[in-house]
Amino acid sequence: MYIDSHCHLDFPQLRERLPEILARMQENDVQQALCVSVNLDDWPGLMSLVDAQPRLWASVGVHPDYEDVAEPTVADLVAKARSHPRVVAIGETGLDYYRLEGNLEWQRERFRVHIRAARETGLPLIIHTRAASEDTLRIMAEEGAAEVGGVMHCFTESQAVADAAIAMNFMISLSGIVTFKSARDLHALAVNLPLDRLLIETDSPYLAPVPYRGKTNEPGFVRHVAEHIATLRGCTAQAIGDATTANFHRLFARTAPSV
Ligand SMILES: [Zn+2]
Ligand SMILES: [Zn+2]
Image (cartoon, rainbow, N blue to C red; front, side, top):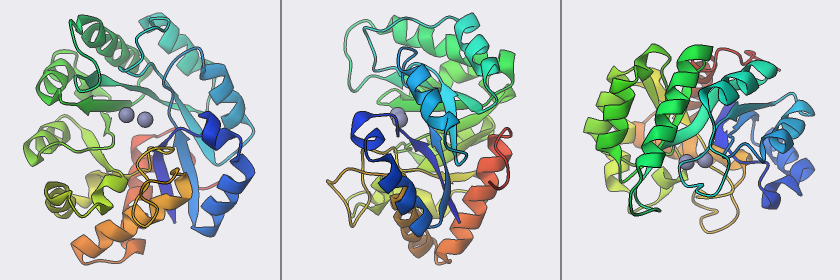
């Protein structure tokens, strides 16, 4: 079986097709999915979706790309995380210097707030980093992110960045990008990563894996991510499924082993 460690099922293009999407998860032996929060305004809607579906989990956090939204405090995040047993992580948070320019001190401050909330709740972090790995690792170290650990999601950075994150108690999650022919550095990384630190994800609705590249992504397609990593590593897709499923439950300790 497989678990999609990062998706956005509450986004309109997925939410309106939810029954079909859940059926496709079942067909592909994708047993669970973690629906990741991107801002607090949409969080009640995300929780209502997860509440009705025992195979789905949620996080709470504000994505670094969202500029014109309510800024979360540590207390906001802690209260929301404690308000619901299906919240299993803090995020997604992190830094993104690719999408936004100018003085991004607010982004770094928001990231620190999330790490503090994670430490206060004991929940792991879901970290997004793009064109900002040096500052991301520095702030993780300064704020003591290793105490709770977490996942570097949709990972596209270097082996050195992966090693530094692993040394801070983090896992590395690979998305459909690993199925793209051009992603050669990521192919090497997929082979080298320790199996007990690997997660798989879709980041749906974005980044559909081959053979669905360019289409709307969904959690059922995470199977293709596992199959591609298995081909690169010379093992079975089931071995990747088993390892990443065990890793998911170890990291997100609030998730039940089976539903
Ligand atoms: Zn992200
Ligand atoms: Zn995301």
